[in-house]
Length: 150
Ligand code: SF4
Image (cartoon, rainbow, N blue to C red; front, top):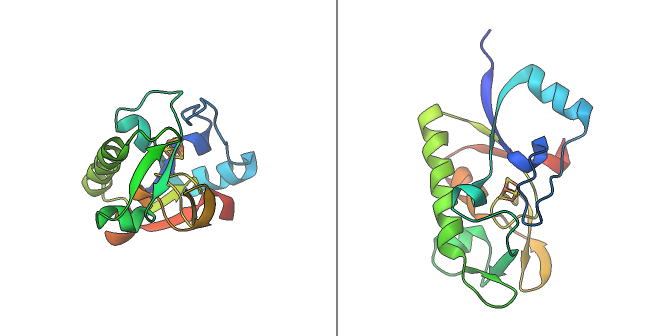
C-alpha cells in the first residue's frame, strides 16, 4: 500500500539548517518507525523564506504564530531587526507544497518561531504558543505533532 506523506522539519532529520547551522535529529528508532509508516517530506521554512544559514535567531513580540497571522505579533532579532516577512514567506511556501501534495500530517521542531508546536520564545521567555508555520497548518486542518512527543 502506498504510504501517506508526512511533512517533517528538516532539522529533525539531521539537516543542519537551524539558525546556528546545527540539527536536532530524531532518535534513530523514532526515525525508522516514521520511515516505515510514511514518506517523509523534509522542509525548512526559514531557508525557504530566503534566510541564510547560519542566521540571527528571532523571537516573537506581541504574541505567537496565531497572533502573527492576525497582524498582532512580529518576529525580531535581538537587535531589533524585523524578519517577519521572511518567516511569512517561508510559511507560505510550505503551505503551497502541503496543499499541492495534500499532506495531512506534519512533525515539527518545537520552540522554533516557524515550527514551534506547543512552545515558542516570546520577549525573552519560553511560553505556550505555536510558530507561524504550525498556526497556518492547523488552520488548514493539518495534524501537527512535535518531534519531542514521538
Ligand atoms: S525553521 Fe523549522 S526546519 Fe528550519 S531550522 Fe527552524 S525548526 Fe528546523
